[in-house]
Image (cartoon, rainbow, N blue to C red; front, top):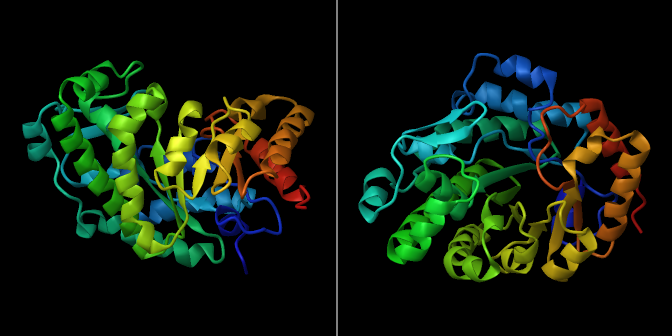
Length: 341
């Protein structure tokens, strides 16, 4: 059986428009919240049985065309000994921020497969459960990981991150170079265990101008994507608020570029270019609207997607925790009913 998701990623014609959701593995599902009750986020990522069950839950409930591996972008950092935790309501918090070359050398070493043996076990278990449904592995891009490590946690303006970027480019390149190797190794572990595609999340790249992205960030994202090119799996690149960066993000080595909801998909396709597929881009909050509006908005995305080399339907960011799971199921069914010309 040919996967519609993999076909769209490769620019081939699928028998229907494929759909999956970022953050589909949990958040809005009551069965996810029940399973996670009392278990910290990072701990849950190290329990293979839990990872398999959480990853499978939305696949069973929605019938999506791909599963996204249940993990977190800071998992490989925790695995190599970085003192951090995911604080509920806040996000990743780093005990000792990294701001010098000595900090880089002291706190960051290369990731070895044995550091994340639970990831290998989880992926292998999932491949057996998923059958013909492909699993997407993922990693955080160097810039986004660096922003957490430099700021010590989430930031609205990324002031300390940009300050280091401008003031000390040598330290900046040392930090992002190391993070790039860690991200690439984390992706490779997942593909070696059976993942059929990868997504590089650069969640905060939208805080940069195009000029700064090209100078300070793109080379390091390119290094990650190049490092897994030999694995011959589709490489998806996604960021939030990255409308002005779409062409560059594709040029960094992506086969598929994620477009967030702030950009009309037709414009996004034009910016990405004819050589790459696109993913997106329904506003996640549309799912709270009446059903006829959800369908109308989805149809607009689907129609625009016809002009792309390939189109994977998705939200323009992650599923919001208060989303009604039934609304997601109806959306999946609606996308699958869309006629492929």
